[in-house]
Length: 99
Image 1: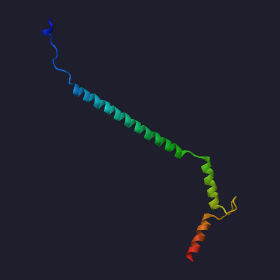
Image 2: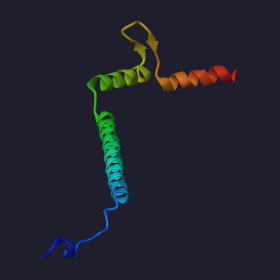
Image 3: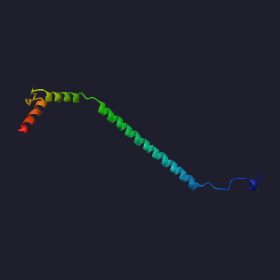
């Protein structure tokens, strides 16, 4: 068999179309990758915020109970300030403004 009689395809590969498909594929993969990273960061931030909100802090709880005691008790605090219950204080304000 001689070279002149060998059968082969006589068309060249369409390099332009091949390069376009490869570039489009790479861009699609990059877009998906960046999207996944953004989604994961959003989920991570949501989980961290949820943990912070649900966490209990002894200092905060202590401060809340101290403030509740200040607005419901009558007498002097550690600084010497006089306190009356909040309900009594609201009644006094209403009486003063009604005159």
